[in-house]
Length: 151
Image (cartoon, rainbow, N blue to C red; front, side, top):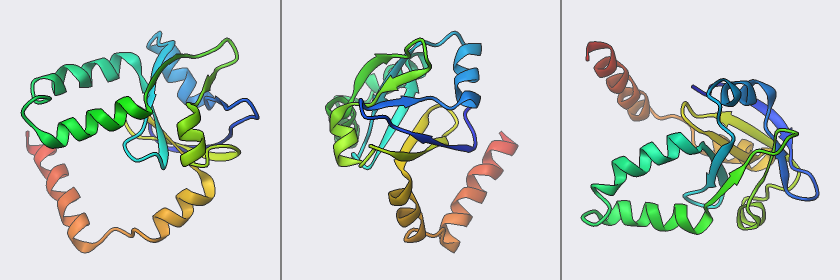
């Protein structure tokens, strides 16, 4: 499980060095292949390939019957690339994502449980400042947590 955040940099060649705490989790699971994608181009999602393949297996049952799943697959395919972590713990972010998401210098890498999310640091700060959790959001999260604890 990926949790927490870490500051990082994307170099001139578009390579992101995966922060050591996250890399240790990938190493522990013997993961070297990743699927890098996005659903909006604002940020990059870095999925361990086994986790992405598990998600694909779950989606395949819905893919032809659900317009929202089709949109999700269109976006994740458009932005997506299967990549390998190099010997220096780096991964090259797809050019489309570097351009649209401004992933070209200082970034923040967030643990999102089963994948990592990479944002331009300034864009992330601006985005989160404009999207505070509402009372309704908190109630929804509390309901999810309560259901998880009961089940």
